Figure 1: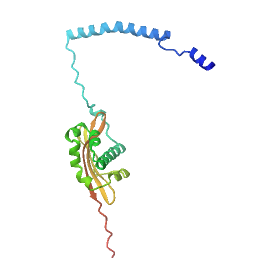
Figure 2: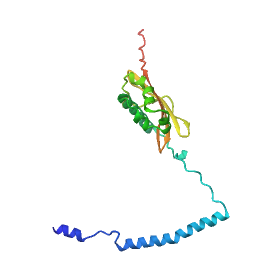
Figure 3: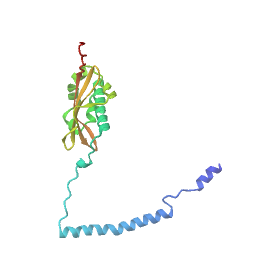
Length: 197
């Protein structure tokens, strides 16, 4: 009971503390002085010379703000894409694959169209999730197609069927998003032992 009484008697400083009143009054006084001056200065400047035009804001950050994906990030992008396609193939629902992709991809491909596109791969009943267990092997370094789209080609070396990929990613809303994807099963070619002599 004594603890409850003490806790109710000791109050933490809040909006009623003198320091808060002083800060609030100072802020109001500063705003009252600064606001009338700013519009007047802008009017005077407008009378003598036209205001410089600012470029319209864009949705995309400037190219220098687009980080080039490193090896780990690139692998994660590919694994994420493979997992999304695998889940869509298993469920028959391509809405999530479409929704996590770039806006252009969403505009060009509705879920019904994606169902058609991936029907061949889906009918082969290939477990794409196995690709999550191995690192991708690249045919070449990722290539910038435009200042916000890059292409990466390679293969997930699995046995007996590897998964070849040709994937495009676009920089959108501060991250790389799927822009285009082509996954092709590839039969592994076994090296034949040399004939004994």
